[in-house]
Length: 341
Image (cartoon, rainbow, N blue to C red):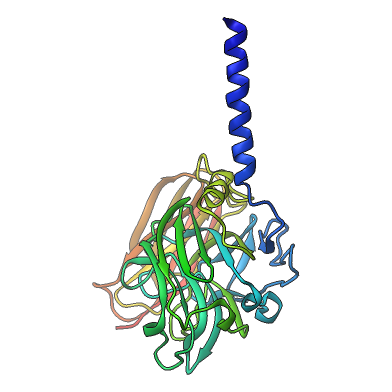
């Protein structure tokens, strides 16, 4: 009886292991990969190394675009997405909570004619219409949004770790969130991978140049030259990002204290202030005018390690330059902000 139980257990375990192995997409079709583990923006598979733009930076194995003027550019003519018969893009990310309320793109490949994103393919966790979306739009440079074939899901702007995947083949575009298929949409005749422009390739920026950048942390971004199956996407989600534990949903903690520039700035009347704590700390954040007078206490208490965001409401304050200061033990950090009414 005991022997039969052990044999049954071994058979079941073997089936599970074989099933997982079959669902692993492996690296044969992985053409580009940016993991940021070595502290650089290099593509360790395809050589399409990135260039950090504006205030973007890499820390603790992640790309941070958590300031308004932050994104990463890659070489579209090295990626050559329009040479693929099928494509999958995969991204692990953490958005700055409630910071992406307009139209944003976390990844974009295509052109920008008259400041409009045309002949392109994008994926975004958050939009002005409160959705996440993956879409391709080709052939209409005047009103590219009208030519889109897209797949939608719920908006992801909650400050939590998420996994998004989109695939495009000859007939359909899909969107997956955290391992689950959200939508699969047939492509219109004008939308084909072969028509995607190789002019631009961005992370945290879109082809519509008037749109703000996407604000958050990108842990990993990958491109496959095949449309992954639902089982393969689920395998990648369960596997987790290279710098992330999916079980606890946490990235590596900051190594040092940091007070970031408020956003938006200038502002009217509200703005957000972010700060990093490498360990649990007693924190005070106060606002002063240019004469050094204390105007407001935004925070006074103990906070756990990690990134935190607080808000400042300047409704009752006059236009002008203010200083916000963070006090932690013997450390003092400060920045200026502009209230413009």
